[in-house]
Length: 113
Length: 115
Picture 1 (cartoon, one colour):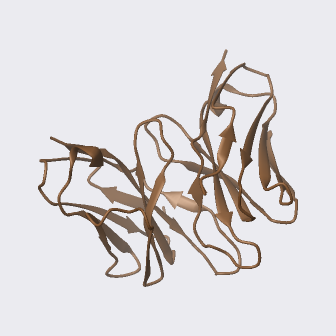
Picture 2: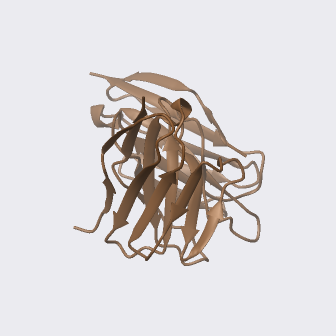
């Protein structure tokens, strides 16, 4: 049930773009994205509901393709503060919600100045 | 400020000695979660309370128990900690209406060391 994230790690220079992917073998009701910095708690970025919507948060946006059971997180013109581990969390369900999320193994993002 | 508080931040216990971790919230959220996170791994859901309803994950060891005496507080009891239980334990809350999912607010975590 654990979603699969790719890539496992990314190294970028400040100002470059990145895409992090999350896929599931189960029908998804929602996809959640969190960022965790070393030694800190995960911090919420955004939720996407089934319906193929795309959301944005400053230079971080995400899409959700419910037919493919996939979500992608887009980081545009990355900043040093974007460094951390990004987790997608998936909520399983087609008509009814599962009311819990299972996190993927995470993607470590390191931004170089 | 409304927040999720975990105590203690660091806990050292001996092998086999029961330990209790606590979580409190001022957000008045109806859902509370306990996660276990080992180094460089994803947070792993142990159980969650939806209001007073307790939901245990199938692969959560019996060694782990939880109590939620009221909306604000939730406890994680580890009855006989083993070396493999050393981890960061994260508490999270969510305002869940049942129809739509909401973001989870995480506490700072309790780092458990087992000697």
